[in-house]
Image 1 (cartoon, one colour):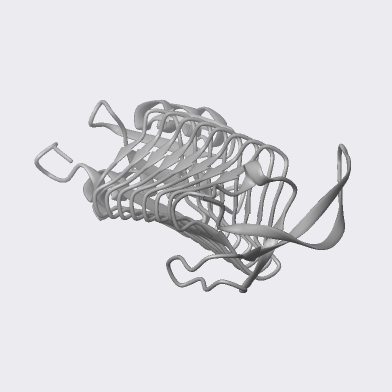
Image 2: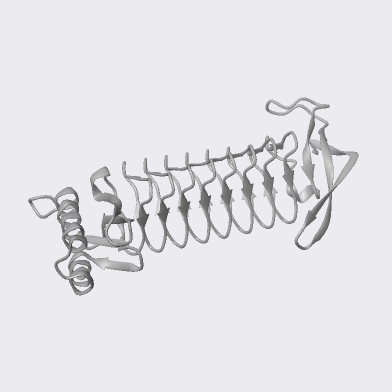
Length: 273
């Protein structure tokens, strides 16, 4: 049984591949919170919105290309779902958020604000992505995790449990952020990062010759990895590079003090994170 029809009202959507004709939809039966006669949003074709379940597109929201909205999912406001993206389960996309490429949003996940999820990224469980945050490539955000602010999670990184990534932070490569960890500010977590506690990461700065921020974090070897400018490696390698570059100058001493503080914070006196 069909649950909606085209109203006959159309609008043009200009995309990189050309102009798409979108159609306004109208419910023809009652389902969920939608009543027969309610106007919905805009779709290119019936494939974009399943006639089964309680999924619906509201307001000025747009779904086009081969994107699909199904199950009990909802797309609101000025949100846009396109390319081959999927929105399913009880997931919601709203405000000015965008979901595209082959991204998938499911479970009770929510994406809003000016956030964007693309590539082959997956956001599911009770995860939230909002503000100007971006999740892309093959990254996954799930559980009760939240990515917000101007944060970016990409490559094959995973953020889950109750972890938070926010501010201008970036999590990428093979990094894992989970538990109750919070990666925020100007933090950069990448490589073999394994951050699952608030004490597993320390951002210091601006300091040193570059007046920049340094991120120290726990890695999968239960050691400390340092991300400072172009440098990415273990603490010993970082100190060696500092001495080679700065000798016994003020900058060298500041960098070494930062590394010692990070060791105490992340590894502790007992040698275990």
